[in-house]
Length: 89
Image: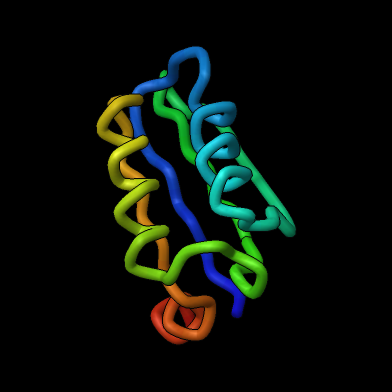
């Protein structure tokens, strides 16, 4: 199963490292990543593969939410199908 992870918050050192370290520990593969900084606001979107993850979707969501709180950013994860449906015009 694929999912989309979004990250938003004030830019600071270690955001990409923190998020990707949690995903590594959960055996979640990053398929694609895009990030930018706009007026000191960090934004990132990741496409990830959960098919070999060592945790279920809810546990993954909880772990990345905890990391977001540590980093002072908002992290969301959605199933790819839900993300795509929400962003169709």
